[in-house]
Amino acid sequence: MSETDFTQTDTDEPTPETDAAAESETTAGETDERVREEWREYEFAGEPKLSVEDLDVHYGDDHALKGVSMDIPEESVTALIGPSGCGKSTFLRCLNRMNDRIKAASIDGSVELGGEEIYQDGVDLVELRKRVGMVFQAPNPFPKSIRDNISYGPRKHGDLDTGLVARVLGRDDTDEERELVEQSLRQAALWDEVEDRLDDNALGLSGGQQQRLCIARCLAVGPEVILMDEPASALDPVATSKIEDLIEDLAEDYTVVVVTHSMQQAARISDQTAVFLTGGELVEYDDTDKIFENPESQRVEDYITGKFG
Ligand SMILES: Nc1ncnc2c1ncn2[C@@H]1O[C@H](COP(=O)(O)OP(=O)(O)OP(=O)(O)O)[C@@H](O)[C@H]1O
Ligand SMILES: [Mg+2]
Image (tube, rainbow, N blue to C red):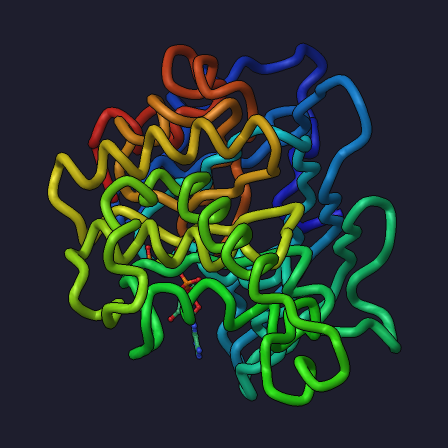
């Protein structure tokens, strides 16, 4: 239980409106309101793909995430929104233990992937990050050919071998590689644009193409969950719209969790939306329509209508 839990002292249940009216504003312009547990509980059919329980992250003395609990359904798009510095990237990085690489970060709480705790001794981090892939804000292809960008991960994991030794041993995966490259690029809606230039350097692609290549590279290792941190924020509107279409398609087979600063984007592409606000708290989590049309929290309403943040 976090210290921000709503504890009721009145006899009648106060409405969020009366709470908000009685409360002042913070320096950031947010209404000073207490978070209610029921605003953060999102009910859906089926087992969660990811189940986060009481997650706390500190960077030294900075408390970046406070007691976040959140279940994420599979084969859907979950959007994470909120003002800068509220902990969206931190939360996303906890889902595949990327924060382990940050020395100052200390993480408490539980994250289960398909019912298995990822924060326990003995978890193979390479395997975890294969199952839970990540796409970053700025496209970051390797300075290699388009083909090699795709096959790099499967080779590293030992799923593809086309080297001399493999050929001598009678195990040559050149055909498999060709298929995997085509399939991954098709899934990322990039194949038609690059099929004639697979051996060209990936850095010669446009920004939008590079980002789709990074998504293809992530798909090539066979993930179950794809984490995306503002994947379209460096792109123009046409490239952004391609990424958005792609995200919606991917949700048919994958669990997608996407951080975005664009409310319109969250509204367009996500099934459910989690709103984080200043102080690293999850304030409200519900169907995307509900969050954008009729949120429970006054702070969430103020944020999505542009009153602060
Ligand atoms: N590597 C780090 N070392 C120290 N503090 C960090 C680190 N990464 C993030 N923080 C701090 O943790 C808090 C949350 O940061 P985070 O990057 O998760 O926010 P965010 O919601 O993704 O913001 P933005 O929308 O600007 O990307 C901030 O106060 C930030 O300064
Ligand atoms: Mg961020």
